[in-house]
Length: 151
Image (cartoon, rainbow, N blue to C red):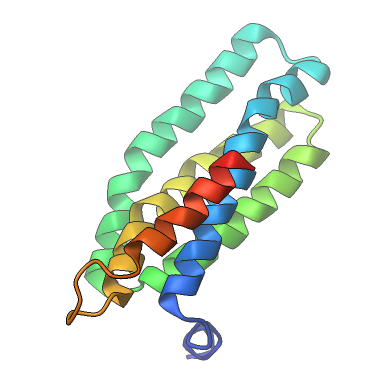
């Protein structure tokens, strides 16, 4: 499979570190501005609230689904990589959004793919750790999340 060849070049822990950095720096910071972006393009407070409710409902419902898929098919690396790229595309879409339909596509993408990354990143990091020294390297993985949070 072509995807497996491309993804096998990256170490699992490096991928988890990069995704953790993107998750907290990119998603954590940009999500603060989604309401401002929507408001600046004329969406009412009620409409923005409905969009955010849709996003949160998708976040709640999709997390267990992605975790099940990752466990069932053991595709942690592919799931984290794909969802990271999808979230980057969603953030680009947010920057270009002007209409209700544009924002609906954004909240749907973020609601579906954010949990694909967050529900499998820890499993990906843990699967990469050595069984001879349990826990070694996990602190380094989490440090990238802390750096992303501080950025």
